[in-house]
Length: 197
Image (cartoon, rainbow, N blue to C red):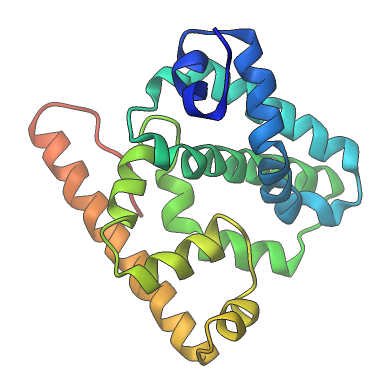
C-alpha cells in the first residue's frame, strides 16, 4: 500500500517502517523547530538532532496511545517534542551547573502543563484546549507548543501584551481546573489520578 499523509496514522499504528520515514518528511521540520526553540540556545545542533530522534522513537513506541482525531495528531506530537526537549534542557542545565533565568521563567510558565502532559494524557489535555475560546486557544498553542514570544503573538494579533498575558493566565487556570476535576473523577473510580499542582 502506498503511504501518504492521508493514511500516515493507521500505517504508523500498524508499525510500517515506511510510515516513520513519511512522518519525518511531513513533520520533521515542525518537530525540529519545537525542540530548537527549547534547547537551541545551547548551541549544539547535535543535541537537537539527538532529541529529535528520541521524540520520533517515543512517537513510534506510543502511537497506539493516540486515540484522538487525525486533525489532533500534529498537536500531540508537538506536545511530545516540547516536553522531551524540556527534559533535555534540564539535563543540559544540570551538566553546566548553571541556570539561565529565561529557562526558569519558561519552566515556571509551563508548570501546570509540564506536570500533566505525557503520552497517556496529552490527548485529554488537547481536548480541554479545544474547549477554549478560539482566540485563547490560538494564543495558548502558539505560546506553549510553538514557543512564540508573547510580544510577537501580541503584534501578530494586534493585541496589547497585557491582554495576551491575561488570556494565557486564564488558559492555565482553565486547564488546571479541568484536569483537577478529571483527576478527582479518576480517583473516585479507582484509577491513578493525574498529579496536579
